[in-house]
Image (spheres, rainbow, N blue to C red):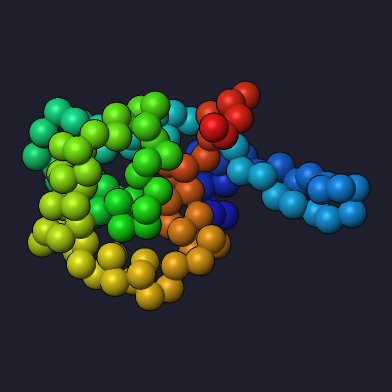
Length: 129
């Protein structure tokens, strides 16, 4: 999945050296607007109350189940109503139960990063808070 996202230009990979010894790969937002579009769809569902299609509901449920939703506070306010709506989708009939169980059972940094990398990379030039 990561290779396809890089090939499409949704994500850019950059190889770096850490402490001058270790190689590390950094992921950055690519040349497309995919991240912004996905976040806008998720925001409409969580903040504006728009009824999601199955794809957006599953994506929202996966992000919620993985515990990464709070990191999007700049784009999606972290309020009690957002949390409630995200948990509803996580428990709903959108395949979220399967996603939640899979995340709980197999979550590692690599798996979560691969599963939601399209919306979790930082915009260019911004450091994490």
